Image (cartoon, rainbow, N blue to C red; front, side):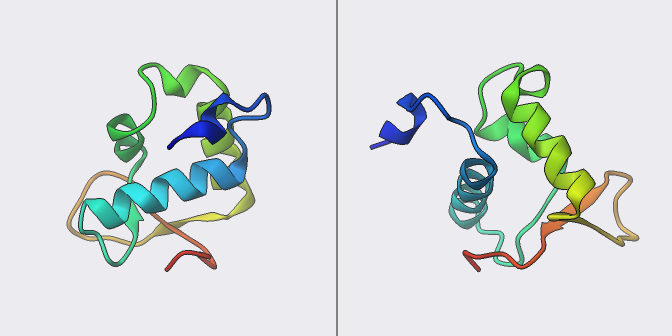
Length: 86
């Protein structure tokens, strides 16, 4: 239904994690790895410059989004630490 997006406090960190997890499941990523470009698929255009971007950066800085070591990609890949949905 998406009604939570109409609430005055939207988005929260929990919203970002929930929407990310929902996207990863639909996209067939059972291991839950993602890059910052992944957010372009489900956040509004220009998300990097609004509240969504602030929350993503805060989650990275707090370590909720953990940087993964990869040899295959030049992109920085993350995984949600202690993911409540996987």
